[in-house]
Image (cartoon, one colour):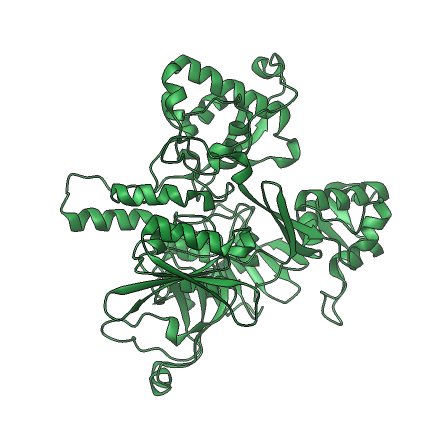
Length: 584
């Protein structure tokens, strides 16, 4: 239902009567929810909005926040919780647990849940009827990843030999409804871009309990802003052999999803605490002057740290926040806000700090002389240091960029502004084109500058073919919705670059597929395919896996494609190690 970008919408605040009716409906649909729980989800003193989309779906949420419930029929009665609500109340709905975390790739791709992909409980499935609401979870992660309705009853499923469709997926993590939140977030570190794994903090707690080490403190979940340079990964509790093998394949990581860490700390030993504090301030002011733009605000703290502050450090110098007097990045940002240089705001759900504004008249900002160029790149975010403490060459870094190509819908806008319709654009560049058209045609509403009046050309570019026959076309749109709606009408592409090689392909990038299975007793086999999408030679990778993990590897061509599959035999740890990369 929400696979594609949501089209035009009308939004309004709920009246007191409508708000009470919504709470009654939620209470009827979910009898195990108390009035206090409902007030927690929909606080009495916070405005609740309802958005009506072109497909008649009603989405209820807190004003300027994430969606909480939606009505798939648009009649005000078929209320479903969003994943944001399920992350607050994981047991709100009964849930099917997948057989393996890798199966979540199909669910997050929009596929319905089939019986063969479900883990059968020891006491069998509980009783359920067709059309009931159920959630979907992965093993050892309490946060649901999807919600849907059962396609058949328990008895019908058993009679069919547990074959066929079990759950019709309506809404899932990373679909358009999830992305419609003001600040989309995830509940724990197990949630990746195209797949959901076990919750690392839960695994650590279980392993600690099983090992009998009662005096060991389990690894806690941290907010993105609190991730420290040099902090151990979720797999550091494994033995040293695993750590060594992880370093051997760490060049598969993508810099945009890697942990905020710095492996090479030898250069930091010569810096005092005061010098590290001064270096942090210098990099921060350099970022405020050069890379942080007013249109980018507000910026999540983790993005500000990894994409703006770290790239501004001097060449050959590393940043270790633990060597400073602040110890944590969040405390450092709070100290800058206390001086009046910036204003920050804490996200009520993720508890992550956001940079909201910069005081341009502050003495520290006005007296700072920024360098013209930034000489160092954030390679410390790309991957941990190698086992021999040598930094990874920049030409080995893998960079994936989402790009968009003008389609027939938006070509008139590009032509009117003089932009090239044959090249690829990033989302921000495409947004600049449409806002340039708005400024050129003076379409901003005089009495409300945050609203854009749609002329014929812009209305056709955004909604032609997307509005149902007989329905009225929108006459205006909010500025914050204009950019995403315009980009959604373009053709998605991606560019993969590594060193001097770069390849542009149509559509989103295909994730690497990994599957581990048993053969003949305790023999484990790992299948790996799709590495060609990341400019990785299958033969080279197979040879490296064979050498590093002392296993046998074979390569075979996948039927109907030009891609190859790598088969690794007797590799109990290969699956774990490859999951530790962000290629999945």
